[in-house]
Length: 365
Image (tube, rainbow, N blue to C red; front, top):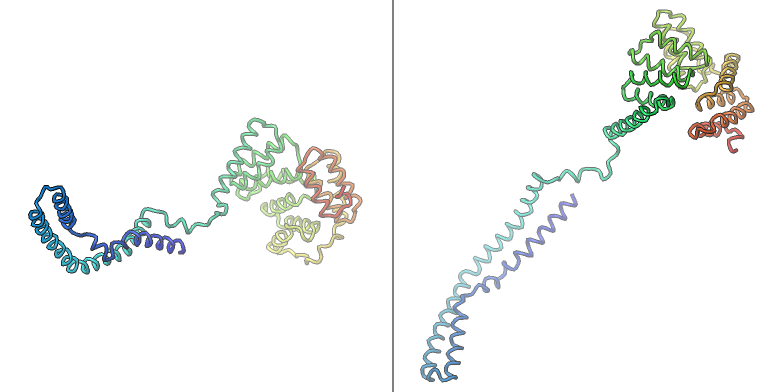
């Protein structure tokens, strides 16, 4: 609104500068008859002719008298015209000034509204990232990764990074192929197999196929505590009509899960839906299933020591030891992870972040 007031004031000032001189009496008087000056010049010329001797004094006086009479008549006519025309003309000019002052800004605003961009003032100065722009950025990034993988098809980590992005974009079939490439190049891994199986489930609209079930079962063999794989295996039993098996699988998963695990609430909902007894939240103590937890942690540690693994798996091992109260083993796992991931800067950041979270003494080293 302020910008329109400023523009209106500027327009009014410009109009007044142009029209103000025309609104005064002097403007009317300034429009005198040019014959007045002509007669005055004629009298002066007669006087010069008399001085040069071109005219006799009597002739000069007679000529000056005639020119003087004409000058008086011209002057009289001018005064009469000023008296008769000045005030009406002044009023007309003031009316024109008022009309111009009102109409010109209104006309300018109307034309600007029709052909200009008045809406531009309603736009924010700095637009927040729009969903379309974000989609374009994501598509550009994916295109760059795809170009890289076309030139380096054996980059297993690249396929593994690209797969969840495909899922986010709704390209589930491409995600399945990406996970297949990652498994072929990088080998079997509990998390990798779980993610691959989940992509197969999404590709079948929630149906757990035999291929997906095989991937989940292999993941559990590699890591008995793999929560995603165990959850989908419970769902697979439910889909096959094995309700009691599904209840047992959900209950077993709930018993070995930390109380604050993000999947706990979902597992409890599934048990409630199936009519199975749900242990109270307070029952989710570390001592429940301690032997199973210790076995799973030991299996994970052995596999990481012999085959290596992802930064997330090393971080999970560190957390598991910390939850069990075995901080010395957690610190040793952190040190072993740093050695195994020495060439992986991003992986080292993951390990250091976990070490800081667990407040391990080796975190500062």
